[in-house]
Length: 189
Ligand SMILES: [Cu+2]
Image (cartoon, protein in one colour):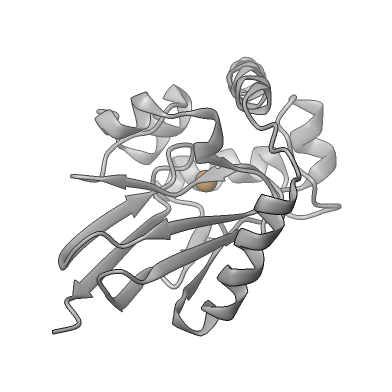
């Protein structure tokens, strides 16, 4: 168990470091203006929360970024994932959404770990082999293997995703692949 934990920590550390390198968002008058006009349209947005219950001390000891003070300890997390293939506290809310094409999904990370909200053609594994293995998602979704730095949503941040067209769209976390959302989008017409 200890060896698995260290492996996971090393993967997550390199992941977070890689993500941080690209996450330099300059503050400028233009950026402020964009955010002001966004809030005017906020009623049309759909809010989604990315949730987890990571326990800061035990996750941080394994070099996994977690900003929460307490919660599910890393060994409990691994034990639940091993037994069930999911860890219930790590999920998106809501996970089934009816929306219109053109609407924006505002995905706020209210957990302590980093998550992604990645559109995939088919649900699959993510970028952490151990979590793929324990959750039974042995084949990574190709979209998860092509992430950019700004695809990673750190704790406390909000990611905006516009729904392109009508039909069913699938989104997942590429770190915790059991975290999934199905969006049923209709056209306005
Ligand atoms: Cu996640």
